[in-house]
Image 1 (tube, helix red, strand yellow):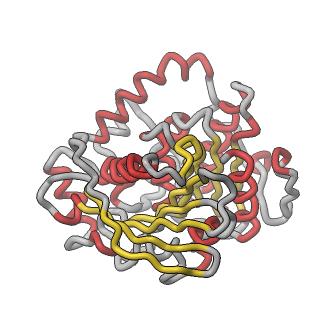
Image 2 (image 1 turned 120 degrees about the vertical axis):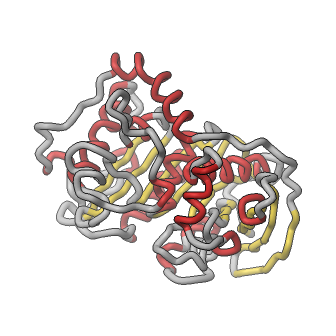
Length: 343
């Protein structure tokens, strides 16, 4: 039962935290968190690397197309001035509903997944390529939200030689792909808040896999994001039941130089914790091979304890379904009701 939404989940498909052996889990310590939060934020900022300089956005509308129930607008805009076209210019869709749920309307940014398909970016969440189950921007615009889907660097119109090349090249400039993704989304928000049809106080972000990972990081980076939905994007970095212990390789934006050190080990739970007390929903598959579920459950439990301590437990939902690396349709329904309540 997802009590705060009045939804009953199939108990044979969704796994409760009480079904895991939590005897070795680290638990949320409010005093420790309060004394360490400033240090965690400073450490993350240092690991993220050099922050780009802001430039005029120079937003250009490229095209628009009518679809059933909405209009899809295509834009380009500047996010940097490095002289590298793929780094500097970002393309994105804005899907505007015929019947918005409010005027101005709430906005959902949909970050595309990875899946090793670099020819697609914004196109999949906009329902134009590959998996229709990933067309979150279309689902939500039909519910009356304005939705936005962009190309992350390395994908679609922003491809370079390959992802590793871009990742390594950034490191030589003292930068990280993780911060680049956050920076571009933040610059996108800089544009969105200027539009009179969008409510600047009702901005959310959602994604699956890489998109889920970036939904977390972007929400930490930009406080204007009020709601985050992450499907299959969070794992322990070090320790037991982690990416390191299981020798798992992730996308290149997952890795931040110096994040996990002997003197200051910072893991994903502390990063997720920086979203608090904003609304957060995280979903994972029990047999997802790239996210060890015991470690995921430990993070879920720690974050839920944090929200419970501050009496914000209604604003956190963590789900673990019996499948793998995907978002089930029933979970989508939970997500959409969650957004309806908190955005």
